[in-house]
Amino acid sequence: MRPEAEQRLRAGFQRRVDEQRERHAPQLAHAGQLAARFECGEVAGVFSRQADVGARAVVTGLLPLAAVPFLIAGAAAGIPGLLPAFGAFLFLFIAWYSATLWRAMRRRVWFYAFTGGFLLLGDPPGGAGPVRWGQVTEVGPVWTEVYNPASEQYRPVLGAYRLRTADGLTHEIPRSFKNVEDPYHEMGQLFRRLAPVTIGTTMPTFPTIDQIIAAYAAKPGPGA
Image (cartoon, rainbow, N blue to C red):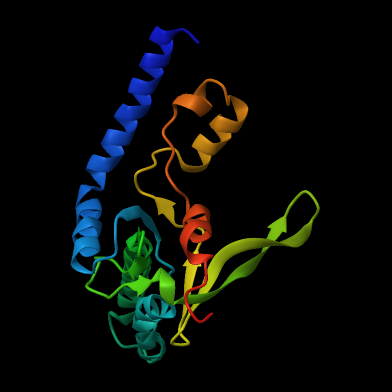
C-alpha cells in the first residue's frame, strides 16, 4: 500500500473512532472517575449491551388484561357503549404493551473494566462498588444452546463467563458486551482476517470481553 493511501485509511479509521468516543463520552468519563475514586488502576475498557427483557416488564405490560373479563361480561350483559369501548381498549392495550417492551429493550447495562477490577452497572450507571480481579478465584464458561440451520441441530456456544469471588458470590459476564470505543466490532475482526496486510495493520483495535477476561480474570487471586 502506498504511504498516501495508508495515511488516508488511518485517518478514516481514526475519524470513526473519534466519533464513537464522542458519542460515549459521558460513560468513558464516568469510568475514569470511578477508576480514580476506587483506586482500580487504569480503564481497560467500557462495554455495553442491551439489557434482558425481564419478567417484570412483561407482567407490567400485561396488567391491563385484568380488565378484559369485566369488559366481556359488561358487553354480554348489553351495557350500552361497552362493545365499542372494548375495541378501543384492545387498541390501547397493544400500544401500551408495545411501549412497555420498547422501554425495556432500550435499557442498557454496562461493564467497566479496569486494570484493578470491574463494575457491572445498570442504566443509568449507578454507584455500585467494584470487584477486584484479585478477589476472583474461579472462572468458568456459560454455554448456550444455539440452533444451526445448516445442520438443523442445536450446538453449544460460549455465551458468557461466570466469575466466582472469594466471598462466594458469582458474577456472570455475557460475551454480548461490546467495547463502546470500537465502531466496527465483529465487522472489524472480519476485515482484519480478510485483509491482514492492509486493514489489519491500520485499523485501531480495542479489547473484547474475551481478551479482558483472559488478561485479568483468568489469573486466580491469592488463596485460590
